[in-house]
Length: 290
Image 1: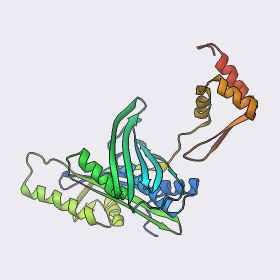
Image 2: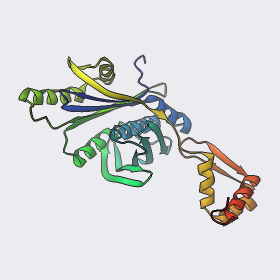
Image 3: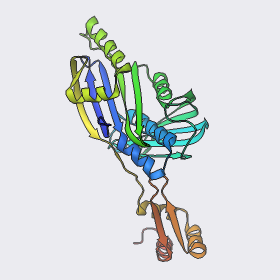
Image 4: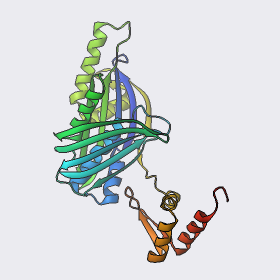
């Protein structure tokens, strides 16, 4: 597909600042999820939908904040996790690898949206998913958690099993300024209606052209989106130390090592006998001793 959308966050305003628009595309991150976990067509599509859904909620986060979207499905049975941080870093996982339903098909279960930072959770909201797509469930979540009129769209396209497009936008009607006229209000409503049914590729081209409906579309900023797992050997080492001396000693004596696989990127972190012996030595030192 020649109009493949890769990875970008776009923040813009239209209709005399009456409509705020967040565009989010993450085809490359969604394809990395598919590749890392060897997902089937349904799993790849569902994972892509989840990544975009989380991205559309990330427009107002900053610093070390992040948005996490979790779905526990009962029909079909599945566990889905997608996370986007303020730097545009994405990670996700899905189990099983090939659910019965795709991202655009109906899912029944619970969707949880979490906003957090290094200091802890700042917001948590749960929404029942009622035999519907993630787009519809998230739109309903937005409608119940905010009184602002909005339009939310998610589109995922694949070709030969490869994710070609994973994109969407969230448009919100903002309160009008004190000097707004009836025409300004009408322009805001008309903009939302166009965005409700517009072609996905055309809207992203409109971001580049700075025009929507023959009116100015002011792009405030853009930001790249990329797949990035937060796992590292140091994090795994700290995790092992957190298990306590007895557990580490058991790994050393019974298994002659430890092997930890990341749920997100599938990278395997191996600790041999010498590594575990070194950890035990570190754990045996009094607190504060180098």
